[in-house]
Length: 181
Image (cartoon, rainbow, N blue to C red; front, side, top):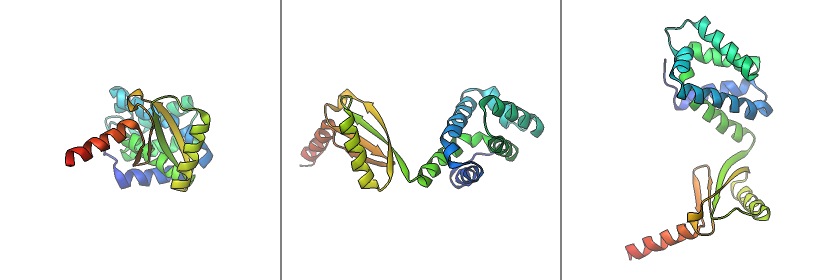
C-alpha cells in the first residue's frame, strides 16, 4: 500500500480523464468522492480494497460489485481495479482532487466561494460572476455562503486568490496600519 502524492496522483488523474468522456466527469467524480470518503471513514472497507492480505481477485471483485451498485462505467471499474492492484487506491481522495482540477482546467473553468454578510440578490451574484470572469479569463463556478460576522461587503476566494471586500476585512487592514504606525 503506497501513498499517492503530487505528480503520481496527477498522473493517475490524467489517465482517468483519458478513459472517460469529459461530460461524464462531474457525475463520476461525485461517486468516486463517496468511495474515497467511505474509505476514509470505514477502516474495514478501506482494508478490503487496499490491504495486501486480500488477493487481487478479491479486491477486484469488491470493486466490480461496488461499481455495479454505483452505476460506474466499465472504464471506471477497470481504473479502480488498476489502482487497487498497483497498491495506490488508498490515494483515491488525492487523485479525485487532481481529476477535479484537471477537469476544470480542460473546461476553462475555476471554482470560487463568495461569502457575504447576507444572502445576495441574483443581480449582484451575476455581477460578481461577470467581474470574476473578466479578471480570470475563465468561467467561474461559484458557491455562495453567508457569514454575518463580515458585517457587510463580500469575501471572494477563487483558487488560491482571496479578494476581501468585507467591512470586517477592511477594519482588519485599518487595525494593522494603525499598529504599524
